[in-house]
Length: 451
Ligand code: DOR
Ligand code: ZN
Image 1 (cartoon, rainbow, N blue to C red):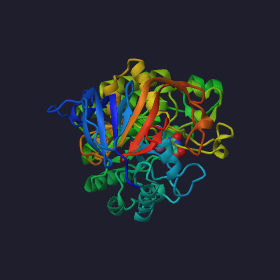
Image 2 (cartoon, rainbow, N blue to C red):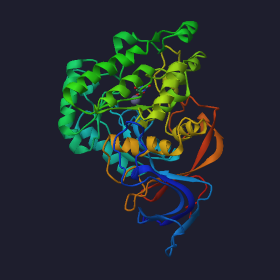
Image 3 (spheres, rainbow, N blue to C red):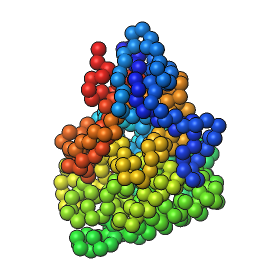
Image 4 (cartoon, rainbow, N blue to C red):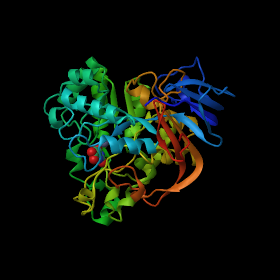
């Protein structure tokens, strides 16, 4: 099917790829050009960004879209998603996950390897790449396993997975507990240009805790795990980064101490980065007091002082990107006692709105938000130049949303195959109206692109 051409008129268009809004110590400063933040038109032709500017002439046959009152960003980039295909399609598959992404304005997502079978070899990477192209609703970039079968014993085949298209390696869902294996992972990761993404959780300190250790866990009678289970592993890993010089990324960083460690490592010029998930900057362990299993996640929701430290770190440049850790689970895994429930929450359809809450609360400005959701993640995993930008010639991946519209999250209205959102009933700002992926409308709330 040939793509239509579109001209989006008079939205506030923000593209920070031309400037440095990465924060105090973030990567990739580019003082030569400035970020774009202006009310302009965006012309999409042949699936690419053809022109961005004021009062553009409409070429023949182009569909004009009135964008007044809306914001346009490059399609959002999410470095941390669980798509469950192959193997657990009853929770999610590449198609339902891509639809959820499109509804949330996300056009590029990196999917974690804890599928069944695990993505630890070329055949599984190939399958994910092929299937996501067939679906064609979002760009799916696989992350390969660090260890074969996620067993933490021997390294997976980084080289052949890299050839097949992985952009990073991780045992996410499980930590790389063995420091010797982590050393080798960093060394091989460096050789192949693959960042190593750590699920930082010392299992001996975590002792199977099902929520954050502290007063709330005590009152609820649930076993807690201390924030040090995370930060001790981050500290150890930073020692290994200093030794190996390899690129290291902390997944879903959740504690105040982790933020201090990453901040300090960056000051020392180490190739250390981190992401924060919306649930960790919007919710605390108080949410577990009602035994709602949709609040169970790894790492667990922390206390208010940890949350405040994340907000500070989002603002000051310590955090490199917002990533959802979208982790669908069915009622079979969630409709059980808190102790027995699987860890994980949906994230794709609410990330933009929850990030906008940060803007409305004065924690960050819109440009910094745009960075954290587009250029920040794209640079971390060295994604292709056209991703996370509206530069002329880039694939026309973009999201248009109304920042004023408020909507109520409804677990029964999600695109995801699972319903485990912790935000059911929450009123949030910012409604996605249109998502273009390669110039195709993959989400179009109001039929703006209809023939
Ligand atoms: O809560 C989580 N769920 N944390 C993880 O690290 C893994 C994920 C999953 O795969 O369900
Ligand atoms: Zn994860």
